[in-house]
Image (tube, rainbow, N blue to C red):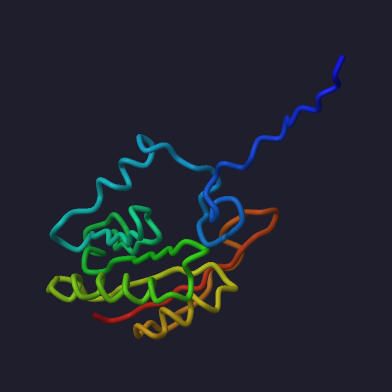
Amino acid sequence: MENKATNTHQPERRPYFIRTSPATFDLEEKTLEQRQPWFDQFDTSGPYRLIVQEIDNAVVGFSCSSRLKEKAAYSSSIEVSIYVAEDKKGQGIATHLYQSLFKVLATESNLHRVYAGITIPNAGSIALHQKFGFESIGIYHEVGYKLGQYWDVEWFQKKL
């Protein structure tokens, strides 16, 4: 009788940033159905936009703008986010995504401020945001717990 070893270890299926990085505070991958409310906030007009970058029919990054807070008095302020696939960093994709997003947002006359939260340390993201005119306004200390530790988030703002 032949003795065969079996591989009971299943490869990790969660996307890179969920598995290995505090860049997102998502802990588990969501199905498309679970993610649908997030997609539904974006439109082809108005301040809530999603810009996607594809290479060879694969999504390699996105930038988006979303509601900062629910109460109506916050409506002139938005939060932006950006993600680029780990193996595509340093190729100018993030710059292109933010240029595209801010070009669209410049047409929104009711917007006053843009905010971005960056889990620190993240020198690359901080440099990108500073390149687009963001200034640091403070830190939420130990606001998220992931990968066995607490993480700080530095907040940045930009006037439109």
